[in-house]
Length: 335
Ligand SMILES: Cc1cc2nc3c(=O)[nH]c(=O)nc-3n(C[C@H](O)[C@H](O)[C@H](O)COP(=O)(O)OP(=O)(O)OC[C@H]3O[C@@H](n4cnc5c(N)ncnc54)[C@H](O)[C@@H]3O)c2cc1C
View 1 (cartoon, rainbow, N blue to C red):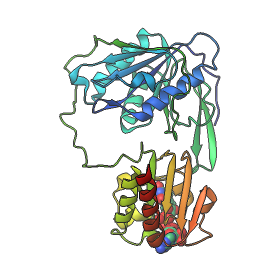
View 2: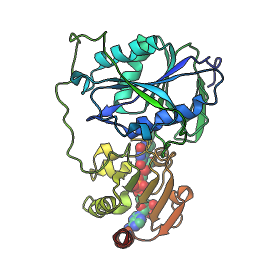
View 3: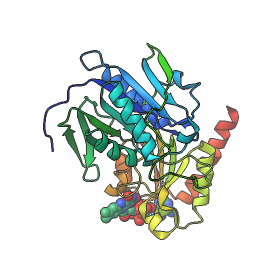
C-alpha cells in the first residue's frame, strides 16, 4: 500500500479547531505532534496555525510547543462551522504562507472540511494518520483490518492534507520559542454561501465526549442491563470521565450510538480506559489501540480483553465497580 516519493516540505499549517470558543484539546495535541516531527525535517520549515471564530487564546501559549505564528480570525460569523467560509480562510492562508502541508486533528468537522479543502487546494488527502508512529512528513501510518495490520501511505503531490487520529495525550514537550498570535482579516469571505448553520443543537451532556475524554469507563453486555449503566455513570463522574460502550450494548439499545467504541464506532485515546464486562472482540479493540492504560473487569479469566489490559480484575462487575467507586472516593477525599 506504499506508493510514490516522500514530499518535499515547505511550510506547515495546523487547523486549531474551536468549539464554543475553546480550542479543542485534540487540536493542541496535533500541533505538538507536528511541532515535534517538523523539528526532525531538514531545512527551515515554519509552522502556522489558524483559529476560525472567536476563541479564548489566553492560556494557549503555555499548552503549545515550540514557536510559531497563529492566525486568529475572530469574526462572530465564524463562531459556527460553515464549510464555505472556513474553506475560504484556510485555503487563503495556506497559499499566502507558502504551505505544502495542512494538518487537522480528526473530528466531525475535519472529516467534512479536509476533503473539501483537498479539492480546493488540489492536495492529496491522508486521513486517520497515527501520530503514535514516527510521523515523517509525507508519510501516513494507518491501522487497517481492525488494527491487525498497519498500512503506510505516501502522498504523490506537492501538497498534502493530513488528519491525525487521536492520541493518548501528546502534551507540550518543547518549551523553546514563542507563539505569536496575529489577528487575521478575512478578505475572501462573503456572506454569499450556499448553506450555513443557523444553530447547533447540542445534546445535554455533562460528561466529556468519548472522542476527547482523558478517562473512559466503558461497559459491555456483561453489565447485564440498561439500568446497570447507572453505576458506570457514577464511576465516570467520580473520575471526571466519559461513558463508552461496546456495540452489543448499543445494539441492545442500552446506550446511544454516539458512545460506541470500535471498528464501527469511535476510535478513542484516553490515558485511562476501564472496560467493564467487555469481552475484547477484535472489532472493539480496534477502537482503543491508542489508549494509554487499560483496566479490564470481567468474570471470565480467559476473556480476550485481558490480553490488551495492563491491569485485570477477574470478578463480577456488580460487585467490583461499587467497590472501586468507594475506593476512589476515599482517595480523592484525602487529596
Ligand atoms: C463488522 C463488525 C463490526 C463491529 N464493530 C464493533 C464495534 O465498533 N465495537 C464493538 O464493541 N463491537 C463491534 N463488533 C461486535 C464485536 O464483534 C463483539 O460482538 C462485541 O464487541 C461484543 O460486545 P461485548 O464485549 O459487550 O459482549 P460479549 O462478547 O457478549 O461479552 C460480554 C463479556 O462480559 C463478561 N461478563 C458477563 N457477565 C459479567 C459480569 N457479571 N461481570 C463481569 N463480566 C461479565 C463475559 O465474560 C464477556 O467477556 C463488530 C462486529 C462486526 C462483525
